Image (cartoon, rainbow, N blue to C red; front, side):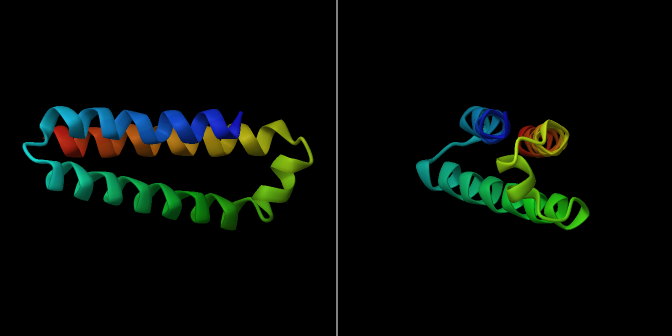
Length: 84
């Protein structure tokens, strides 16, 4: 579940940056920014839900669902900022 959220969370902003970018360098910069922001969000959620990776490995679906929600919300915000 969390892996699917990560993939969709990265794909949404990259799809918008493909539409908005004019060069490959521009696309690369937006891609790098997207990954960095998503990693920051993961760290913030990990701080709130102490031991997030272990909780997901232990099969705690609520932790995985929270991570997916945070990733998707962040992806939509990034996508909106890229397309503006």
